Length: 89
Ligand SMILES: [Zn+2]
Image (cartoon, rainbow, N blue to C red; front, side, top):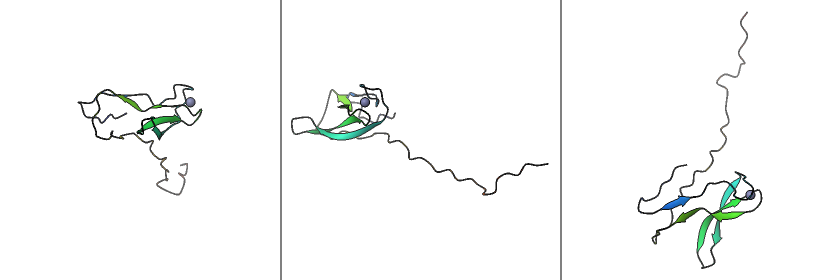
């Protein structure tokens, strides 16, 4: 997991695993914190549990870097040759 944060900020990322059910099926969502501020939070797609993406102890007016490693899309493997290898006799 690549953490790209300015060194001056202490960003403590939480593990992208549901603390409730342990499911790695996690998505992110913008949630309201209640102060009219929206922040990105993890959202468990299995049980619906939501928790903060990260704790930031020293924050500026900048928007947080949403440097989240998205799961790579599945690569469709294509065989180099259409003909299956023939067994040699
Ligand atoms: Zn869960």
